[in-house]
Image 1 (cartoon, rainbow, N blue to C red):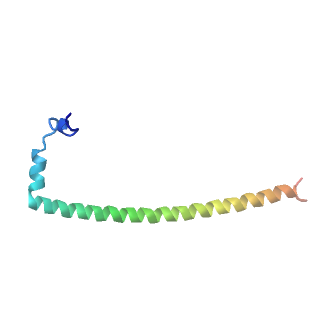
Image 2 (tube, helix red, strand yellow):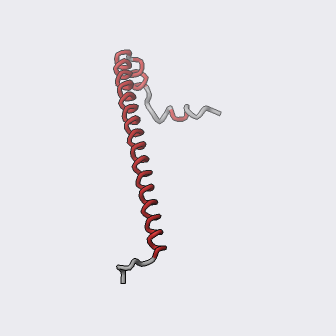
Image 3 (cartoon, helix red, strand yellow):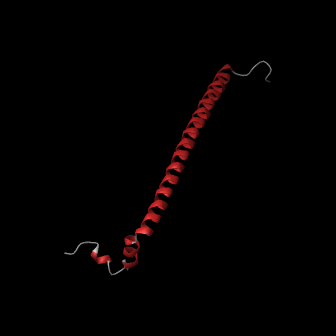
Amino acid sequence: MEDGFSSYSSLYDTSSLLQFCNDDSASAASSMEVTDRIASLEQRVQMQEDDIQLLKSALADVVRRLNITEEQQAVLNRKGPTKGDH
């Protein structure tokens, strides 16, 4: 039984990819691009994590305020109508 990769060799021409990978100058430039891209993505991830923390904090504040409002409304409903209500 042959391995799973050899069955794909007829589907793709990998000679140009291998030539590119063996070219040191292209590899070095590509490596710098990859390094820059990774650094950029890491920075974006950090910014998104910061944004998520801010959103969590804001959501927690909204939920807290909503709970306070609901508790206040429940207290008012238990007291019944005030003297000014007809």
